[in-house]
Length: 314
Image (cartoon, rainbow, N blue to C red; front, side, top):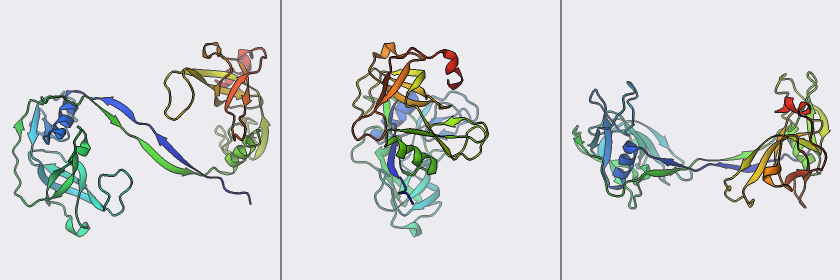
């Protein structure tokens, strides 16, 4: 039995988000240890605040300050915190309705165990020592014995040096294990060959293979070697340099229909100025020493392919 292939993969996409006046005031307020909500036309106070009433779609701008104490409305225990979660020790996820608010805020509660948590318990905010204008300025909630108060006071939302943008991280770590078809495809690439699979029904050859025809839905097993040359069907010019990618911009990424394949795969185009890449350009793979896949594709010097030869693969 051949070895089962697997590889750790990380999908990460942090992006910068600009803030409107309501969100800017809310996050700046957290930096200043102040919790702001927004009042709706019918008098409800929403925390966290939103810019439009979720019921009427009315624009909301009337900010109001609520208390830093509140009541747990529901909770769930987390016995094994993961990387980058708010606390490194077991904690409870809680929805807390702050005094003066009519909606609940999702955060974490520092408690010794699930037996110490219950719906209706009173809690207060524990502020982070260093605050930057983010939801993490609330380090967590902690149990706090007090009577509930329902007071909220109008607030201008004005602070010195307001927060106008935030970076939102998005990351997924997982281990990928390809199936039979993709394992054969990857093993062939390590031998500088490209292998697809033919559908027994429509007879189309799909590269990379998935083990089933995406059109007919039937299993595929017949292996077909394609390429190595192919035709550029569509392409884009990349002008933003990717993190940890040692390729100077601008460069071209293209869909390439390998000879004998009925599905275009993507690859980088090199060996030609970016502004000379075109649809129909004939290309071939360039392999680096020890590489398990083509580093890029370069022009073959052949005449461009006729549009009719690849129009069905756009």
